[in-house]
Length: 194
Ligand SMILES: CCCCC/C=C\C/C=C\C/C=C\C/C=C\CCCC(=O)SCCNC(=O)CCNC(=O)[C@H](O)C(C)(C)COP(=O)(O)OP(=O)(O)OC[C@H]1O[C@@H](n2cnc3c(N)ncnc32)[C@H](O)[C@@H]1OP(=O)(O)O
Image 1 (tube, helix red, strand yellow):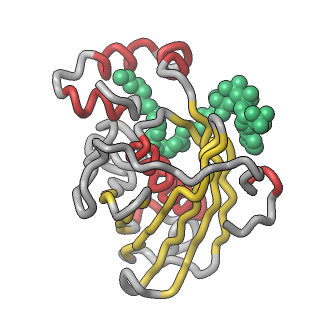
Image 2 (image 1 turned 90 degrees about the horizontal axis):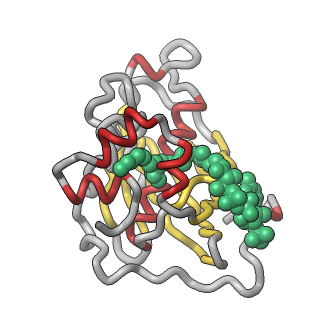
């Protein structure tokens, strides 16, 4: 964590995150949590289709290839798209805690421009938990998994009840997601146990 923003600095009573016993083993692809998710869904042709994988501890690795649809400046990824890649990777961490959580704050540093067709290699980890607050950090590298850092972010996710989505989402999509016969996908749509 950069610690530059007070709200992204864990309080003194924060504790270390605990990996859920049923979290997927290191190396396993998580798959999309929701087919229509702009970050990871395979039913979003212009989305990021980011692929996240469990790592050791409460950590995730992910890859995202910048497509022409993701441009901001000519030939370069839009900063908001890169922030989405970081947000999606950080959000995937909550599946390892089996916590339902939404992004409250996302602070992003854009360090290097990222050209179209580049693979962004992301790594994220939860650093601390304090009540409903989950603190996490991520970097995105280019040129390979050990390449130079192009983007980084610190985030605060807030744990919510499943009602957060049911009460606020459009009923059409909520009902469709809830009747998904794939129980694992249905659970991950809410980032929670079936
Ligand atoms: C089967 C059907 C499926 C349908 C749904 C499908 C999919 C589900 C979607 C997502 C699943 C989850 C993850 C998916 C993976 C990746 C996607 C990336 C994740 C996202 O992209 S997700 C979207 C963007 N995200 C939002 O859409 C949030 C909008 N927002 C709110 O809904 C509220 O704002 C909320 C709930 C955040 C808090 O509201 P609240 O009333 O529950 O709690 P409250 O305000 O009391 O805050 C409690 C403590 O957090 C501190 N706190 C709060 N906000 C803070 C901030 N911004 N900065 C610093 N501190 C903050 C307070 O200071 C207090 O701290 P303290 O306890 O110390 O006083």
